[in-house]
Length: 330
Image (spheres, rainbow, N blue to C red):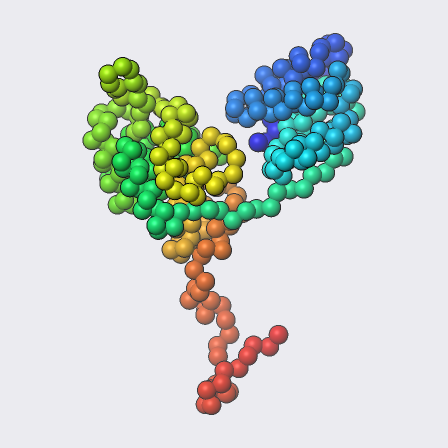
């Protein structure tokens, strides 16, 4: 959860800001930050700041100091919060404090004096062949086979699946366009035969609707398709049978929306890396802005690459007659 960009006050408004309550200042920061961050990120950050203010009994901007921040984050750690959660809370507090500094209500950002340990990068989890077969079988029986299959064949995020429209699917060129990606940059993802087969099934199911995976409206005695994106809850609930059937889904940490669907994205990336797909190509398919994110899958790349021979010195003839190869000098 990146902290929203701090928004300062125009010249001459410091006195007005000083007369506002902390709750009003948080509201001002939240409303202005929506210009530079997603509404969901801003809401989460504002909730963290309000939780900090309430927990520490702070009544004015001047009461926010390094000691209060350290105690608050320490309580989170004692309660069992993960390192990533602690970093996210510190980031949210830093964004709000930067806003207070810009408004002249704080001399400096106190979160800078409270270092936290960055979370270690964990190796991604993915489904092995047996788990994959079970997941596909259960998904087909539950009526979400095309959704699960396309996720496994493209690595799309849950939000990208939900927003996908038929106008973004180019069967002739065998690719789909992700217009509203997380990095706010559109990207093209190639479509395998597996992906095209899943899309063909879905096209037959939903007819000529605009959305590839439309919502469903149910009532007593039946249901019908609605040509609009499904809710997050509908996507999560639809994967429940698969989560029950495959233990690796249930063992995932956290409760964030779409985390179980993200395991399918990790499976796509892991299988691609194991098959020898270039990490740079994989980063483009996944929509990673930083190749270091894709490097989480580097340990899955094939151990031997014949290109290493082109980068190595030639084997010398000495010692070859008796079956011994020279060792490189260290």
